[in-house]
Image (cartoon, rainbow, N blue to C red; front, side):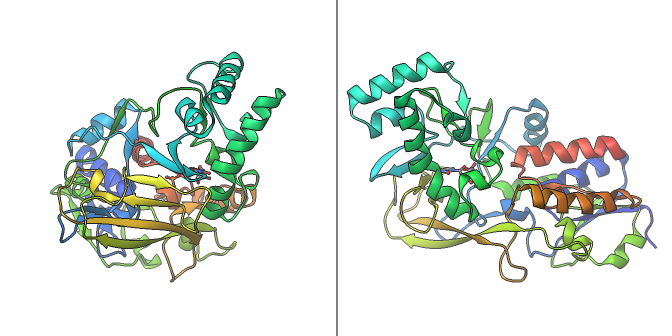
Length: 370
Ligand code: UDP
């Protein structure tokens, strides 16, 4: 019996933050376990033999408008001032995503772009972000044409590759993450705080977990018997797995990254290029851009989306659809009946959190349970 110890299942951001809060603010002991051989969950990164910081599970770009999250993280790391800019290849033309005024002038002849720009300014407030599904509700013929163009060239094929469903069959919040932007601002995010941790994400999580009251055990599976042994249990794994899939499996999308190393300084012009119209991969990441790593070689990854299958690949994205939410709600109801067991994180809450939202959720959950 170790009833005065807290158990955290999962050493990603959610688990690390709640562990640290308990250790710091309650002065209690915490054991963090993870079935993986490393900490930091899907934000895990490492320097490879070329000195390039590789994001093993895909590019992670930190961005937040939350003062609370930013000041929390600044205790554990400094950030560079990287601001993410994504290029998309549309009909062979490299341009910027989210679709904005710069995109307009890249893909259309100038006179046409000018006409569309004027109509956009007459119909939308400057700096407004318009989700594509809302943008399609136009009465003006030119704007209708533009909406169909953006839907077809930016969203339809990319979303079908990414989610296995068309944009109208996935929750509108998903495509709304990359809205049509009535602006000249070409950045992917507009948050006040943006950057990449100077020593990588793994180091940040390591620093969060570096506390005399916190112990970490890797390569360790959670087992139901553990519930009896700890004061509180915080579970950041998938909630359906916790309940032995009794109501059915929660579906996830997974990603397969095909890494390639090149004997040249750079492969592409920026960190991320989306291919919404071509190929089976969705985008190509070139990792050395994030921390401006210097090497004669470069490492890229082509990102292929696929369904999550237990034992075959990793869970990356909960799939926000009404039937999945109702299935999740059944597990949530059951979770509420448990004493001192809490669920959090992308998998525990079955929510498409960005890193800052996962951190905020962990900070808020601590306030609830302390
Ligand atoms: N999306 C798209 N085309 C793009 C970029 C994004 O259709 O060029 C849609 C797609 O449905 C994607 C969603 O917008 O899943 C959110 O994109 P984001 O880049 O935020 O996804 P993440 O980086 O979280 O994978």
